[in-house]
Image: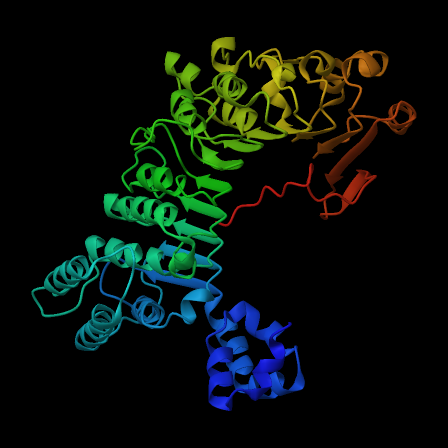
Length: 492
């Protein structure tokens, strides 16, 4: 502010240049510093608001064949961003998705002209610290030579899509969240580009920071299009993303036994990821181990176990016991929030599997090994010793002393609750001194008198279910939407 008195004496052309070249996030604050700046910035500020609405949340949709209108628009958007450094600063959330045709197809001649024009513009004006001029020329020539079919029409091949998305990744200096939704092919090309971005970012001097991409990326959401085999190349791309120092949250959907996670370029723990959320997952324990080995400090872990019964002795590689043992090995002193849900009972009843041995269902082992765990949310069947006999374990023997909040998912009968909560009131102070809140999602296993007894002991119970017309009934004591301040949401 000491030198701001010089600003009014500058020519208006220079003042406008300063305003127009300011970071989009700073323009609004800059305009408020005085009336003169506000008047000069009026047009720029209006354009800033318009561009922010258009570019903050971008979706790049590709259909992997003859393009529809949205697919063509994705190429045009890429051209605009690649040739305008100001627009590159707006995207905060970028979605890359594949889908079946959702609208009218663009005529072959029209699509060929529009995409060629977009790539001509990009190849001529594109400047990046990650891609040399020679590499850009190779990309351009490959795309132009492969995207014309025998009818002379433009066609989106997998190679061209991954090249396009690889280029996009170099143009996102302020992006905070990237969603990759069911792309048919991610390829090693994208993984290599992310590795290149990570390496150059870490080696670049501070004055280049405004030209670097993915430096503010906090969250990556990847949903696989194949739950059993990594045909999409998810593991390589995920491993590359985890080398970015800014990344904190990782969300995976539909990852199964075929996801090996064995292509790491660096074998030492280097990732700053603190949250991992898996939905519809059936990872082998050794593959989960390979992820956790590269995480410095895991604080939040959420796991939705999709396939509880896989048959044979192979079950031991996927079981809740194996997953829990892996977590205890790598995060027992850091994990504060654990969400572990499964459709176990539904799957067993639906498939009429009859007797299921303990080697397949458990025993899970005790959660007491976690030293700082504060919030635990899980399907209560994970605590069962034997599914056929439906014998759960006593909570006072299984929960860690550090636990503050517990949520048990799905219906719990009063008989199960009697076993699970045996000795709870008598031993709470000794075994679970910090436990203050238990939520039952989908059941009311206690009467009001029992609830009052727990409240008298300093333990609040939330027992809620939906009635026949969708109303929440029971003993709802708090307005919490989730436990532990962690929102286990999915962007898919």
